[in-house]
Length: 133
Image (cartoon, rainbow, N blue to C red):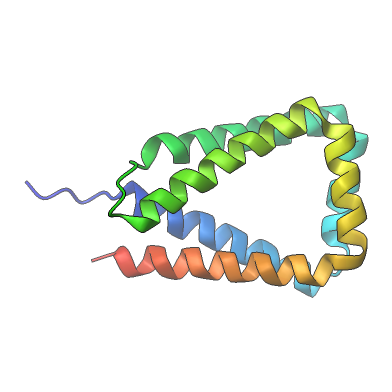
């Protein structure tokens, strides 16, 4: 029987769309990411929620995508998910250092980060959409 569900296709497309539209929002409203990071940095509850949610999403993507060296997109998704889980641990354990790093970078490189995020989101979305048959 032919399998109709490809977790790599869906996770790349959905994560790509999320990232793409987050970047569009940041380009439309300069300074929004700095405000977001500033609010999370000030609230232990938001730190716990955002770290937990990122850990959950990263774990689901990591576990759903096999490591098949011949499947580049699956390997990229698994690596991104691993980085998401590492970032979640940094948010939970070292939030004071981690958020100060991002606040310094976002203050003068906001547009650059938004453009890089847009390109990554666009690439993931296109790669995911090309796998749909």
